[in-house]
Length: 120
Image 1 (cartoon, rainbow, N blue to C red):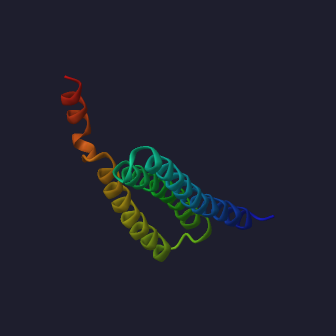
Image 2: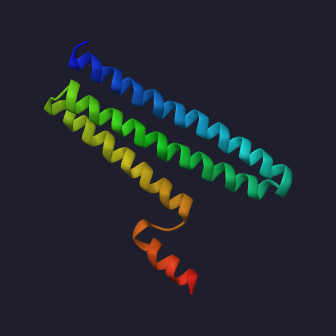
C-alpha cells in the first residue's frame, strides 16, 4: 500500500466518523428529548433535542474538518485545493461558532465574565 492510498483511507475514515457522529448523536439527542417530553413536557424536550443535535453537529464538523485538512495536505497539495480548504474551514468555523453561541447563549469571549457573574 502506497502513502496516498493510506491517506485516502484515513480521510475516508474521518469522513465516515463525522457522518457516524452526526447520525448517532442526533438519534441519541432525539431519544433523550423523547424521554424528557414524557417526564417534563414539550419545552424541556425541545431544549434537550436542540442542544443534543447542536453538539452532534459541532463534533461531526470537527471530524469533517480533519478529513479535509488531511486530504489537502497529503493527497491534493495544490493551491486550488488549499483555497478550497480555506473556504471550507471558514464556513465550518462560522457554523461551529454560531452553534456554540446558540447552545451556550453567550459568545466565547463573554463566557468567563458570565460565569463569574453567575457564581457571585
